[in-house]
Amino acid sequence: MPCQSSDELKELVKEARPIAKQGRVADYIPALGKANPNDLSIAINYPDGRCFSAGDIERKISLQSISKVITLALVLMDRSKEYVFARVGMEPTGDPFNSIAKLETMAPSKPLNPMINAGALAVTNMIKGDSVEERFQRLLAFIRNLSGNDTIEYNEEIARSEFETAHLNRALCYFLKQHHIIEGDVEQLIDLYTKQCAIEMNCLDLSRIGLVFALDGVDPQLGKQIMPMNIARICKTFMVTCGMYNASGEFAIKIGIPAKSGVSGGIMGAVPGKFGIGIFGPALDDKGNSIAGIRLLELLSKTYNLSMF
Image 1: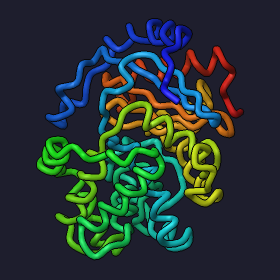
Image 2 (image 1 turned 90 degrees about the horizontal axis):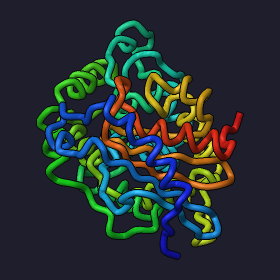
Image 3 (image 1 turned 60 degrees about the vertical axis):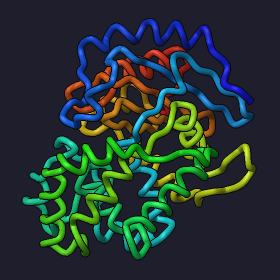
């Protein structure tokens, strides 16, 4: 069923878009700095196949940190909760997503959660496979399965741009390696992680993945469970407590749904039992979240009473 343009969503986008002027695109990653800060689009996907949208929902977005929650799901399926959480914690942090501070003060020195960069690098390191290519292809196949789109690929220019500027992530990896949280070659891990972050899709694909999480791992169009219910629930819990970086508490109060953002300006939302949301608005606030995207979700949550709390 094709995605229908929605007049109600168009009005909400029109109301939210002006706040984009207060944000800025993630130009510290050169390839992301080319985005138009005024872009704003949304797709909402329902279990019965209906889809409503506003804006240019076909525009490609690199997943960036949205990939963290999907990789976590794959690794929990690959390994076990015990294996994963022996190496990565479950607690929110008030620090920026790329901070090293807590690693230095915690004992043992494991990342606080899988949604900050240190935790995400540790999780990506756990993807099974004998090479970067094999591990990446397993993740890509999982993402294609979740989205129902076999054409999803990664953007080589963005991956290369991130690989060349990933100095802080390399530092995090060496710190984690020193404390035996990760094993193996750091450059290979950075290669895999930057490709993971550079996987591209549009808002419609993003909303379909959000829907699978919203329905506890069930793809309603295929009528089958593509991730275990308990893993989908773990991931949604992390989305609520840590998904919007160190603005997650405020987001939970104002909007109140599981969501994960990325510095490309993407947001994936999962309204439990109801629908999935995909948003793109590349102008970011000072926490690294889409400033107009969050405003749009606030309006949406208020209008349709979406909060799960």
